[in-house]
View 1 (cartoon, rainbow, N blue to C red):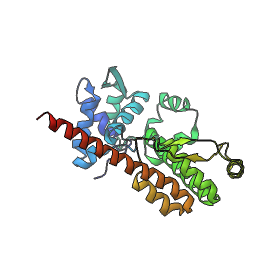
View 2 (cartoon, helix red, strand yellow):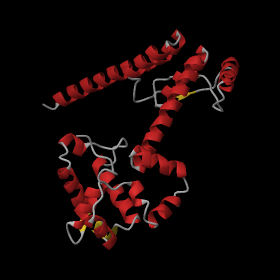
View 3 (spheres, rainbow, N blue to C red):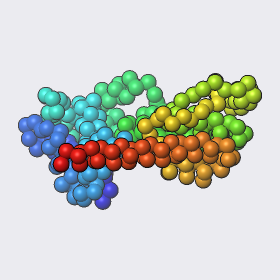
View 4 (tube, rainbow, N blue to C red):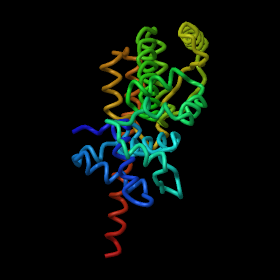
Length: 266
């Protein structure tokens, strides 16, 4: 089955905590995994950020919310125990415990009001996602929107802007050095960036063979498939590939010379 939501595991978490005088949250995670018979894949599922296992994150949020409602209390680093109120709930256990159930205890609404965002609180309650998951999802949506908008702006720009963008990208990645632009190029570049609402200043660049790296084929192929630049833009990447070829030839020559020198000692 899929990883249960943090509200689905609130009652089982409370029962796990009540099973001993005090429990480590890490032990509760194992108990929840066994109760819900989670597969290896579900147990190893990570948050979108890749920083924590999903089930661990949801157990921690379930514990945190029930602490705020007074059903559980913290007694040490990573240790919790059930309170008298929590035992009363378990004496007549409800079908499930969720955010709405916790709202009957005065401490919990006070805790939520400190967040100063009714919209966020409602979203958490309705989505069943933890606040951290909602934050990551929101960030990912914003990032994708920005990427899409930027891509459309670049594709709508005139060819000279794209050519300059390729040069700036390669220079920023360490594939060359920047030189002074001609007045004509500077004027065209400034007009283009102004039309895109950017404060970026563009200029022409020359790609001397001074970098230790070369432009990778995937980058060139991606640029070609996406934007179909003019030959002038390809000349820049061609210079980078030529530099790479000359460096490889030079390296082979040095290795050959070195091998010959070493052979003389035999």
